[in-house]
Image (cartoon, rainbow, N blue to C red):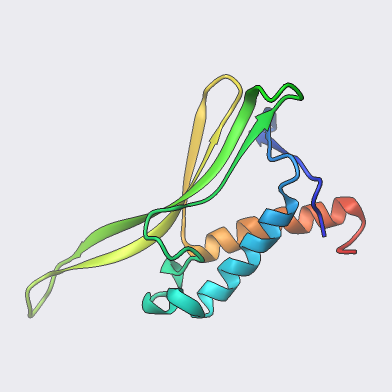
Length: 146
């Protein structure tokens, strides 16, 4: 299981930041948690759409936050974080009054050492693909899941 991995962020091929020392275990656990939530296990089952199902019970919570820390514990060099947000959407009705529909999305934000940021808004399926890709890449770099 990858444990001692660090993520090197790049934007359009240019190094962007370095984050997440020893974050492999957390990423693998999150990948499993998203899979379980999408399958409707636990509290996630109360969301009818699998794309709204995430492993956290709180509607607006943080799934992870990785920062770069130097040996002297100074923070710098970048940040990668993922927060859940509940978003109300108005669904107009054709033959009946409109209604509000709640959705949940993962907001993945990356900040480089220079303070420039990027954001992606993901469904649980997209977050699962993203986190599995990170874990699979780490496994590949380490020579396999063992």
